[in-house]
Image 1 (cartoon, chains in turn yellow, purple):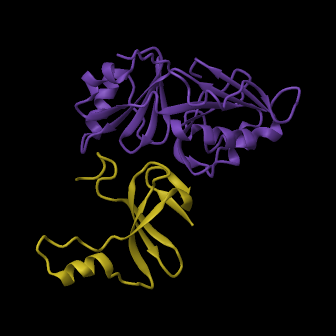
Image 2 (tube, chains in turn green, purple; image 1 turned 135 degrees about the horizontal axis):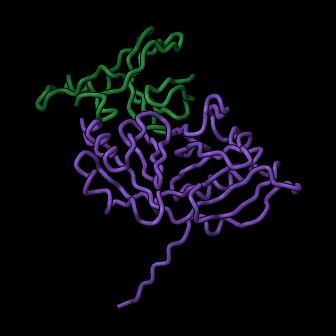
Image 3 (tube, one colour; image 1 turned 90 degrees about the vertical axis):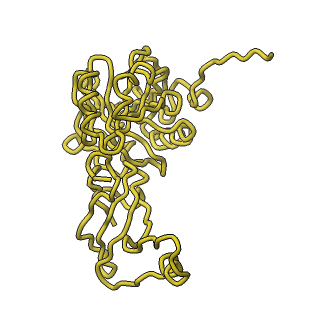
Length: 91
Length: 209
């Protein structure tokens, strides 16, 4: 698998690290145990397009948001995650 | 009080043995030169200050710093892209150090001295690209990686900053690699192994290519 880094161009998988699903949002302080359990442990096991964080640690060290099909590995979109590239993405 | 004397030493001081390594030919087809005693400062734009950094750097260096994987040459410094809104300033002789750059650039950017944190290896010779192809997954063909091209990439699982300098007078390409000091010896040995079949001419120099 190759990933097209928006900053560096097409690179081999070995330069990237997978973090996981972009969807879980950290619950507010004081959230219930169930909500925290859900956030920490429970993930959807989607057969199809998923949105994932990948880190280009072996390259420009930017975090990327990648839309990948888990059935075909086809990548349909790659964009910098918030904060990647101080000028390019609003905080 | 104990007297300390600080003698700067290259991280490759033990590993680098000047001479020829590997195949003995009339002329070694790979040349590895460690460049010593350089000034290297990394500038990273503060959040939302990328444009301000580009403006301040233009005022300081007379050129717009690279905003894509490439290098920009000034008469006395090389500006090397190292990631979005960040670049290295490579120079010699104390003209561009954190101390001299900070007044103009520390507003829009964080500055960090990398002079002793990286090793600079210059690779040339008829088989330089063939040797590097064993270590790098990126396309170094002249059409894809011309003079002035740069890449933040990995070689042998080690993060490096790679760029193509000006060709030698004989037309041969020159590739420069900045590698973390503590990983330099490992990468150096890998380069020697990769180049052994072509013959490697090993040296060190004080001059930036």
